[in-house]
Image 1 (cartoon, one colour):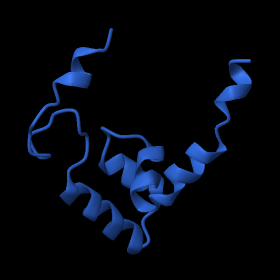
Image 2: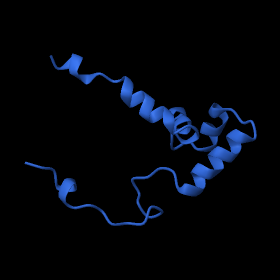
Image 3: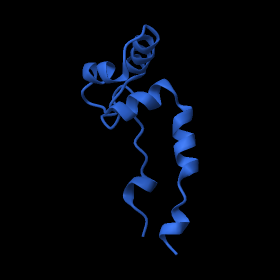
Image 4: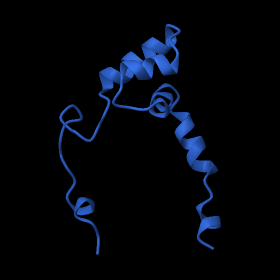
Length: 78
């Protein structure tokens, strides 16, 4: 039986969706701070609602796809 959220998608604008921890403005600010030379750990202190790994994913979105390619879940389920 499928979960309810698979059938009933929430139709909210991104700024009102409480599941999101960072808004688009926050992401732009993170990229700007990193470009100015701030360390990821320092940026994570400014945004305590997210971890350093999330900050890394905002700065370099290609890391997410690289991380997902590296997972080989079949070896765990054999």
